[in-house]
Figure 1 (cartoon, rainbow, N blue to C red):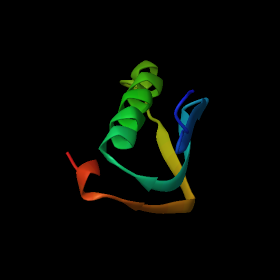
Figure 2 (figure 1 turned 180 degrees about the vertical axis):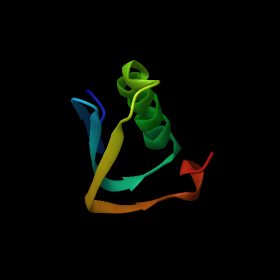
Figure 3 (figure 1 turned 60 degrees about the horizontal axis):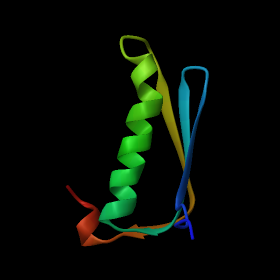
Length: 66
């Protein structure tokens, strides 16, 4: 069974958008960082933006910091 994704990341032109849900642990934070970097890589050297929707985000546990 696939793990429940606690976020959605997508790019619209030069804007990276994200929706965060629930509470996060270290593994969710690392997965987010990895996916974010993959979306941002084509934008290196250009002007770009990052918008995060935190409507349903709860909190991050201590293990989410690194």
